[in-house]
Structures are given as C-alpha cells and as structure tokens.
Length: 187
Image (cartoon, rainbow, N blue to C red; front, side):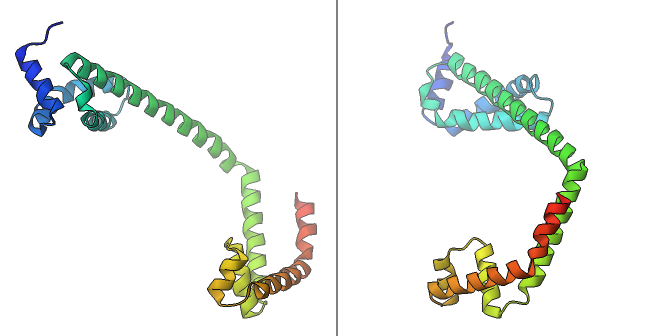
C-alpha cells in the first residue's frame, strides 16, 4: 500500500518529534483506538487510559516507524496487549478476592484473628511490668531492629542490649507460660 504525501509528511514530522503533529494524530485516531479498546474492555474510561498510555509509549519510540501502517499496527497491537494484560490482572485479582472473601467469612479466620489480638494484648500488658529500659529494648527488637541498631538508638553497649533482651524474654516466658498450654488446647 502506497502512502500519500500527507501521510509521509505526518510520519516524518512524528519521527522528528513535532508535538503539534502528534496532537493532530491524537485527535484523528484517538476515538478510533478507544473504540477498538472498548471491544476488549467494558469501561470506556479504562479504554481511554489504555490508549493514552499507548500514545506515551509510542512517543518514546517514534523514531522506529517509517510509515503510517506500521504506526497504526503498533497502536492496535499495543492496545490489544495492554487490554489483555488488564483483563488477566482483573481475573487474578477477582480470584484472589473470591478466595480471600471465603476465608474472611470463615469461622477459622474469626477465631485466629481474635486469638492473635488477645495474645498480642496479653503480651503487651506484661511488657508494661518490665523496667523502662527493658521495655524500650524489647519493643525495638519486636520492630525487627538488630542489637547494633538498638544499641546505637539507645546509646548503650550491644552487650547491654543482649542482657536486657535475655532478661526480658526470660521474665515474659515465665509470666506467659500458661499461654503455651492455652494455645495447645485451643488449636
């Protein structure tokens, strides 16, 4: 298929990065491309977003195209692939939501959530009875900070951090030993 003079000028100006020409091309083809995307996706807004994104993608590689047919083929293929990726993503998301909803509605989830919250509450109540420094060290350790990070933050030696942690854990183990039995009974 032979390009007419107007098409040749359009392609050359697009290749050279003339934004005014891109605007003309956009206005001429946007509705057509949105209509094509709409044959794959139900949401017109989503289709407009897809086409807009493909225009941006095209602008990044505009120098690669020598004729209008290649440019249009790029748009159709890119729009199709983007729409199919969106559909796949939505299907995976929907499957996840369905599976997650079933679990969230289950008694197991309710039971686990309540148990976790109760245990967390009991542990935090017991932490209150530790010395102020033991509390600080333990809470920082629970925030997954290393002994070195805790020592630096509190301005104490790493060995002091280790001894505070050991003492705190020993006290909590002793005070909370009934939880282990409770967890075994409830499981």
